[in-house]
Length: 214
Ligand code: PRP
Image 1 (cartoon, rainbow, N blue to C red):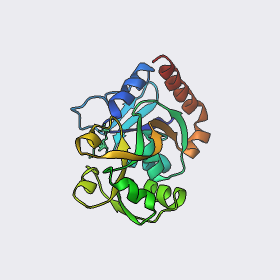
Image 2 (image 1 turned 90 degrees about the horizontal axis):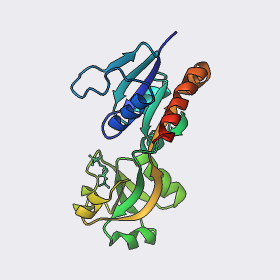
Image 3 (image 1 turned 120 degrees about the vertical axis):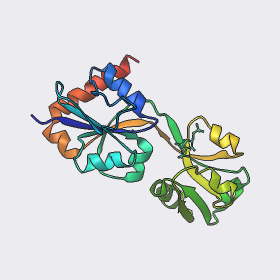
Image 4 (image 1 turned 45 degrees about the horizontal axis):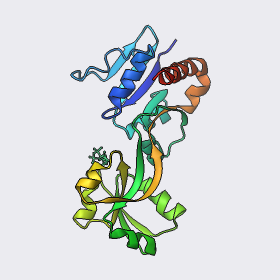
């Protein structure tokens, strides 16, 4: 019988995700060792493989079936827009997708004029401004430190994740509009869901159980 492969997101979500799996009796076979350069971890006893990947790559691995299951932020799922089954909200990694900027941009945003939006999430931004708000925007794609953009005059506003709000506060920016709530989700490949239904359902129910106990 082949192993079920699980792709986890490196970084902020990794420790909490690995702790949850461990708690549910699904040991990651060393994936939680921060010093290792190993890329894939095999729990032969349970027939489960784990690997860690950058957030935006997790939906890709799952979509193409290189991983059967993925754990990734809802922001990344929305941005990548791939057809996957989203089966479980893990409840951690909670934050909000927001339009932010200086208080002075509030009027501009409401005026319907063409505005410049800097973001790591061009697809979510397009969907929100063009489809939901029917506002013409110029989207500027950045890779990080998005809050810098309105400060140095690259954009009028940003679309980004707000967790504690401290990055905004420390840079004199505010939330202007809330787009959607976010958290870590479990996604499943659509073919795997059919072919490996029993084993995947078992894994998901163990996770669900673990969450209930928290
Ligand atoms: C994220 C996000 C914000 C910040 C929000 O950035 O892009 O900058 O966290 O968190 P807060 O509301 O708690 O301040 P991240 O730290 O992932 O790094 P990045 O700027 O390089 O994307």
